[in-house]
Image (spheres, rainbow, N blue to C red):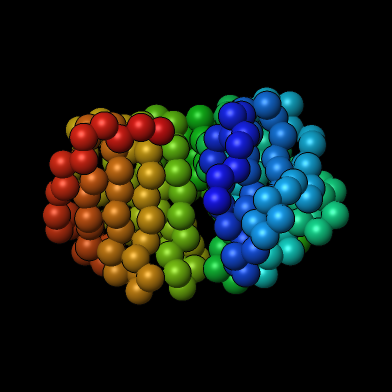
Length: 220
C-alpha cells in the first residue's frame, strides 16, 4: 500500500499496527488509518518542521519533536495537544516514550539528552544527560527501560543509566555523524547507522564493536 504525501518526513506504526503517524516538513502531524488509507487526525501546533513522531506503548498518545525547539504530547484519539515540553535550546530531533509509557526521552541541537515525566508534575524537573559535544540526532530506550542510547554529530553513541544519569559506555568507531540507533529486542546489542557509510553492531553491555557493515550512502 502506498501513502502519497510528499511533505512526509518520518513515519511510525501504532502498537496495534492499524495506524501510522507521519511527521511532516509542513509543521503538521497526520494519523493515517491503514485499512482505509485515509487521514483520520491532523495534529497542529508545531511552528516548524516536525522531525520525529512516535506512539506511546498503549497507543493512546503520540510524542513529536520539532525544529521549533519543542517536543509535544498529543491525544492520539482526539488529536488534541496534551502538553508542550519546553526547555531545549534548539531544534529537537528525537523524542520517544519509555517502554512503560511513563517517561519521554528527547534530544537535539543543544547536545543534552532529557527525560521527562509524562505526568508533567511541575515539581519534577526533566533529568539531563550531558556528554555529547555536538547535536544529538537520535535517542532510544532499551527494551527494559533501564538504559537510553543517544547518537550524535560528534560521531559517538552514548549509553546512559536511566536511574542514575551515569554514562555507562561511550561507543567510538564511527568516523562521521551517527544518525540512527536501535536496541535489539533483548537489549544486548545496538545497531547504528552513520554518514561514514557504515552500519555497526555493538555489544550494549560491554560497549565493544561487534561488526561493521559497509552500507553505501546512509542518509538522515
